[in-house]
Image (cartoon, rainbow, N blue to C red; front, side, top):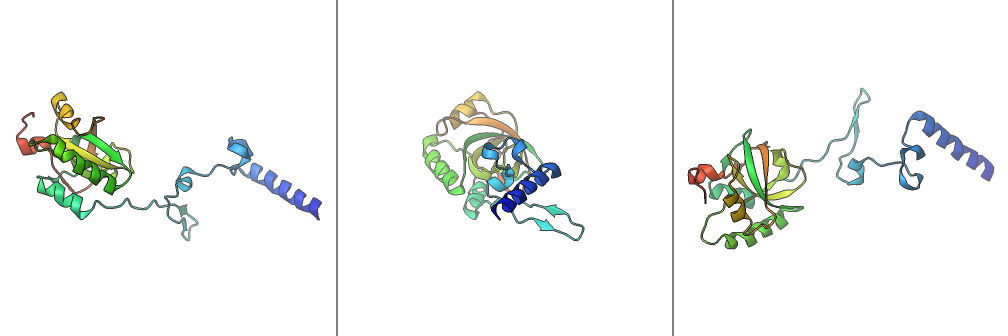
Length: 184
């Protein structure tokens, strides 16, 4: 019995190799077939099969920005800029909205009596940003001046500029719209 079980396992291995399925040849450690990154991350929805035999995997929708973050963005002059290309000073990129909110709450006092227009938003909301992050960002129509970036670094020492297209309808304050294009 043990010998026939071994033969069956060997035959299945050969069949897998010949069928083109992931195998020991794919360079996976310890001879284990590679798992697609989508599954490895755990962020996937169930595969579905329709009558035509199509199988697809749909990624879950990213979480929506909270009412608190949306209300704050609107309260400092944010309006809808869907489809517009803007520049963003990215102050922080965090895994959770709560973490991004804490970062902005700590930052506001560091700007003193000068108004900043940093908001919390999803990186998924912008074409040109890596998806999956909660960002603390300030938007500009033109490339921010070195003075604007230095102002941001009062609270966010590693702040950098990124150009992106707004993909969502959401209140986003744009610096030049609110201060008339003046520099700080």
